[in-house]
Amino acid sequence: MEGHPHHQHLPQYQYHQQQPTSSVGVDADRFPQWSIQETKEFLMIRAELDRSFMETKRNKLLWEVISTRMRDKGFNRSPEQCKSKWKNLFTRYKGCETMEEEAMRQQFPFYNEMQVIFSARMQSMLLSEGEGGATGSKRKAVQLSSDEEEDIMEEKELEKSNVRKKKQGKASGIGGSTSGNNSNSIKEIVEDFMRQQMEMEMQWREAFEARENERRLKEMEWRQKMEALENERLLMDRRWYEREEQRRTREEARAEKRDALITALLNKLRREDHM
Image (cartoon, rainbow, N blue to C red):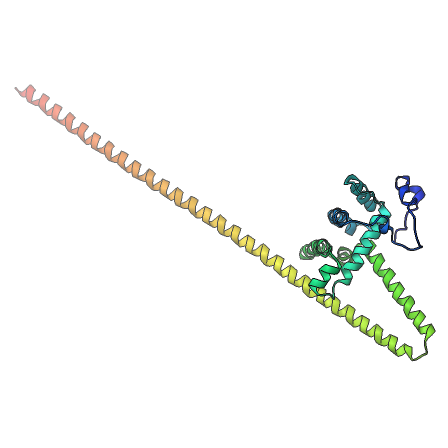
């Protein structure tokens, strides 16, 4: 798990230290507030680098790359702000799973952009599984980056801490309720896992059918081209045979005329000799 870099090692981001804070723990991406256009530019850059995030556990350099590319687009954001923004967007995206579509888009206007990133990640995982080279750990790496796994671990630790506080502050009867909540949580996790598996299988089937249809169309086009070429070759052969037959007929006719002429000359010469 990577640690958060200190500001004294990144002098180019000193502007972040000069901004006022009203309380401890306020998100870095609130100073200044991210605009819609800035967030969309950020998600476009993050989508381009998503494969790199999946392939490495140390993402500090990648966040610095995103910060640099944001600066090139006119948005001055530090790597820590970019990472914090992604954590916030990821948390809100996960929270939209149980919402209706209309309410979801009102509450989280960047759902489509996030969906594109995770759909592409899932497609990459399906292709890897189809090639037979994906192990269990590889599938996990494809689904979540190290930052996202870190966020989920923090949420789990927070949930455990809340459970311990409830146990300490309530009577022993709370134990049964907590156990029931844990059972419900496990059930929800299993149901969510099964739902994701079904969605992945459906997407894999759709992708497989699309590739199969494309292959069939290309094969049909190739066969049609081959048939057209074969018909053209047969037509050319037929024309050649016809021309050759006509040539032989003319040659035979000329030969017969020549033989007849020679025979007539010889007969004439013989008659003259007898006279």
